[in-house]
Length: 560
Image 1: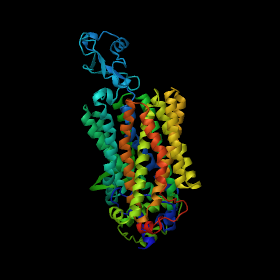
Image 2: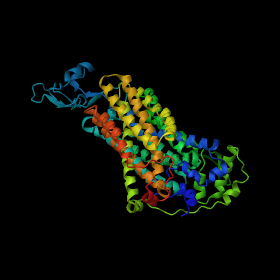
Image 3: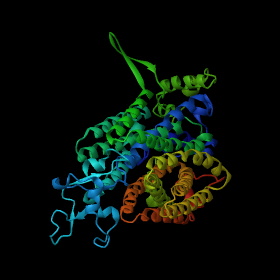
Image 4: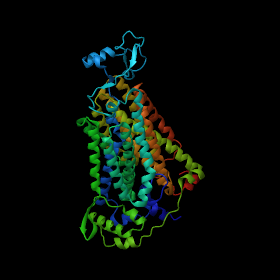
């Protein structure tokens, strides 16, 4: 198959798992690019679209990591007193029912599920469960799903299940919204996802029962995957080939900003329902990205009032809707101060040829080296996903001041992503990933040591350094993954690897949950994963300044 045809059709390649959210890189610049020809490589029009799409990462962070504040793992609780002890002060009651470690060989947090049998002191049962319910320390959050539905003790696992299902919903949404965006268009799927995320999210705040909240939270997360996929694809499809590697790296900055903003909102809004309502109302503001006004003049006419984000011109060309593509490109050229006179002629002469179809499952079966590479990369993504989502959640448990920890952790994404741009240009991908992973692991263990010594600022500083290294690692692996796969399978194979990251995200809340029994287990687990992950890079080739494979067979012949 002609390589130019492959390059032209790359953005519309139909994929099995992840829609069109593929990875393109600077080496694709060797191929003809219709947008570069008509509107320039990267101007004001592209910049506006990329910024607006990247801002969608803010509500994505709220959905994926909202568990930090709606169900804080540091919630302190104790047994609720029966009626005859209601006149006691809180401190008197807690002192009366406290269980000594000698009597109960479990941790302090778990012992909160039990109390001394002060009701029947002569009974053989010296220790009894909390029969009358629980009371909570509401200093951190006046209300949370933990305090509202008593998700402690034998129900505490429901918090981990909830966060796991958030990641599972995003995972399941990828093969739904990706192909839908290929068939119906980027914009309609994006707006549908935003509306569904908002409506289901608001519905979750109104549910008086945990099962109802659970279902609506799941559906809201499912819709979030559509925003994730399409926003990233739009950034790629409106950009020139030469600028895509930089955009891939910088696209993650708003995610950290969203995490910090969530900490700021939670500081002023201590009720979980109000906090989520404010967040989802903010999500609804993104619907202004697409706005039509309806007028009645004999018939319904849909008149464009303003439209911040247009349909992807690449997708319009791929489905042979050239007139709409010309309209958008002429407007873009005007914004970029480019000549518009030749755009229609250029588009009319443009012929889209459907690329040869390469199903990833078939490639995995036929090509052993491709299969091995996919397996190794999937394990890398599994580890990175576990670390990435795990450390973000762990940030809320570092100290008594959860708000400072979360805000600092989120803001770290700005310098780390900017530095990552220069690192991937200055040294090899493998070296950048290995060093950042080792740096992350060392800092996690250092943070654990300072947590034990009750040094708050030292712990936050080391943990911040760990996040710094992890975000660099997360940014570089996006680029590295795309460079390791052949053009004809780059979208689908990269999407498969990213799904493993969500599997890692599903595992991370359970690792965090072990901290309720042994506080150091999450630190040891994440630190060990980070220290061992560079071993998975050894079998993979370095891709810096190397020609990328065009076909899966190239990997079998040359190993590159």
